[in-house]
Image (cartoon, rainbow, N blue to C red; front, side, top):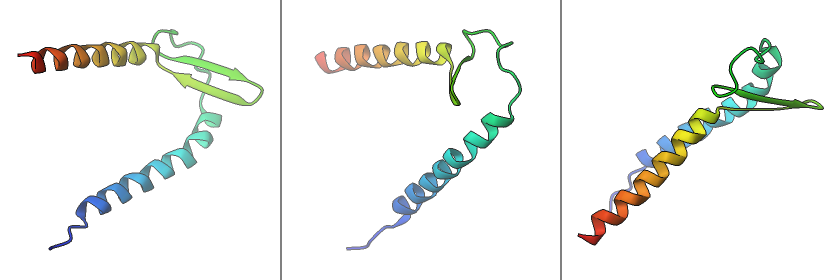
Length: 80
């Protein structure tokens, strides 16, 4: 039985990149300019007591629509 470690290597590289992003993101957020000028539907910024939360409501809406879409069509495919 041949062991294929390529999948483990890919997962390892992805985890390293995610770790670097999680490490670098707070530094980038501190240096960012004021994001209050961007419309809230595109980018919502919540800042309180040194805590910053940034999200995109439009991406959340698109994600919810895609999940509902995939669940709907997944059911209809298996009922045939």
